[in-house]
Length: 362
Image (cartoon, rainbow, N blue to C red; front, side, top):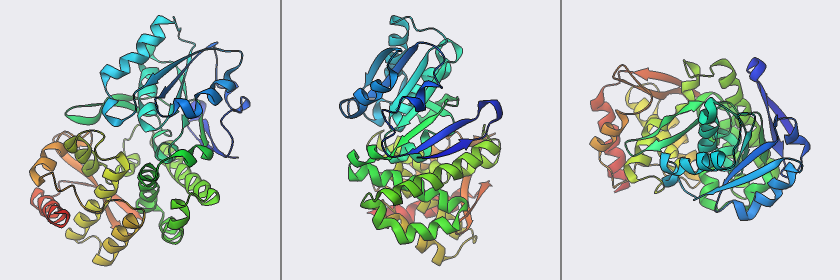
């Protein structure tokens, strides 16, 4: 087991990464302050890992909530299932919620914890690669709205994160690739050495080599932990973690939640960000080609979905969380392994890049 720390002073917490962690009660007991524990999971994960999770909680009063599986269920209506269970079983403000599942379960459980009785503790036990390297770390919680992804939420840090790499063996190939998209993102943001490692080791990740997966998770979590420690509430540097996300969220919303996996949409968004950066003269065609090649090597899309239009992208991006005072902020690349926040990019250039990608997709 390897343990990293998200350094937030008194609210610092560990990220445990390794094999056979699920079931180790010692990892979790110190982070539960009361006797009441609510485990939130979904219909896919529950048959695989719920029993093992509950075995960690001997001596506590436990209840479970099993949600439907899928991004399309990440909404306020389904969120009420968690509140209903907490209230029905009279959970108090010393209770702890445990998120056992992927990013949807983690985001919804975290938001329930942030808002139930104005804030209770929660623990992340992510079971997908995407959630282990991204959504479980950093305290972003929330739900989607028909008009925009993650527009309703709160910052609420977990007490700890337990990333058991064994759970990745039951992921389907599409979900594994979607998680690799977020791994790749850390290289593009600020880790050129990691890009080289990924170019060399992508086949190992796709084949679920345990040492390669553990290394990729460790580097990704360390990169994110460092950024979150420096900028918890996204006042500056943390926005770099949104590379590809403005385009990607538009894809998820425009296509209908769940049609494209989050990682697939982010992969397409990162390529679009690279192509836009080239159009602005910040990087050259060789860099864009390395971006596109690395994304494709993970079996991820490199174009926008042909079903969308450039205008639909523009309209959806206008309600993105990163719009400030009516100005769209994009995370773009100024070199391979280096990203910057850009404001006021000419909409005509954005449309040109989108139209080229849509033509390539068609």
